[in-house]
Image (cartoon, rainbow, N blue to C red; front, top):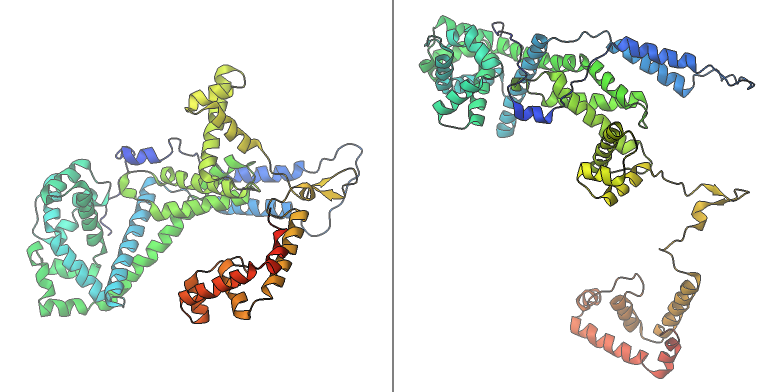
Length: 492
């Protein structure tokens, strides 16, 4: 691993990814400046209007003081973490990549055998994979113009070889590999990355054994069937264990380092969203969540600086949080994006025309109808009104008291329905208990849920035909004039 050559990553190797990233990379400002701004804000809050009496605060710190103190301390703390250069950034990303691939090996083994692999089992798997990678290694050697070596260790320690497979993968190497293995570009990239990761994960004691034996590519697989070789490998079990533990520890530490070194980037982006309904610390918190996701998903082999990639995730985290939390009534995320696009267009038109643009002009620029522009504008500028808002001169009423409740019945209708229910209960009382219960279930007179003949039959443990007979008999009784006249007044 010490022989890995560090080179700057190019920024123009993958135009497809560039479309998904923001064109304007955020400038990371000095965080101490922002901390001073917070202090100045506190000092500026001491001015009172002329003629007003100063009100002394209680002894405990108020909420805004706690917030300002917390913000200043946080900004000062993250300001102590130095920024990363490209070389340091790539080294951290490589360690993260190795740790995640080692985790994947362990998880796959656990999924297959329901136990985690021993260090020797991991080494055996790495050797088995290495034996299959000889064709790809030959293609890489031929492409970069180095003499083909039969010795495995000489090949994987060659600086030019390492630079070709550990860095951003050259498009011509990708094409040559795809042609050589007879597969597409994606499979070719996976093969090169697999060769890079596999050879970096080989523990130093194993490399020492391979170097002493001058093991050739053709003889790598023989290590797994030679009892003497396996015995020598097993004798280094504790060293393998320590090495793999170090790889995982360094991967976690690298994730933390990469995150902490870019916290200033989060602050510089979050500052631009002050005044959107969320305090600065909450904006920073949401941006930090986006930063963590960026660390988790970043692929340094694509050739982009981490800050360029992370900017998109940080802004996504902040803007979506603003959309969710800044308003009493949440606006859907897709509508927030539409609103932001509309507002940007409005600002552009104001600069171009020197006046407020009409709905027709905005709609023409965005390709939507003026009516749609008006709807979006109304959604953005309309503030919710509380139903608890007091009204009247004495403010003894609430707005909610005057809002019609369409879910409730009018008093006269509610009274009529209650009387009808009482009359139905009286009429049903003249039937037998079984007949009454059958009608209540069939027409949902108790709970509003009408049952089928089969459902009622199951409750009484009789056939659906028998329920039909009982229902018919009960209805004939209800049609008798002495009973039906009690309900006729409710039929209109």
